[in-house]
Length: 116
Image (cartoon, one colour):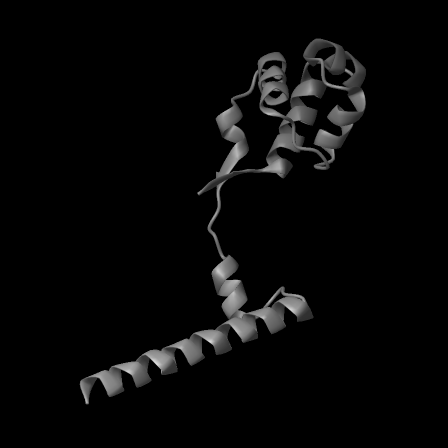
């Protein structure tokens, strides 16, 4: 799955802006994006809207698709390993597994009684 790389976007916007010898204020005037927002894009603190993204790519001459990188989804693996979860999330995962095991036991018991 491809995802927007805010790091790649920030680096590209800053490099292209400096190559064209534009200040953030000048780029703001050309794109219609607030200067503060341009600074935030360059610091990876803001993701532009599609319209803003198109304006930046047009003025700075870069391909929007180049800002996307292939990224693997690892959330389910992390949840199973209980890494990077808060205590509340860990309790929720444990409760979910207990519910799944209970449901499995009920299904097995029903099958056993239905076969007798």
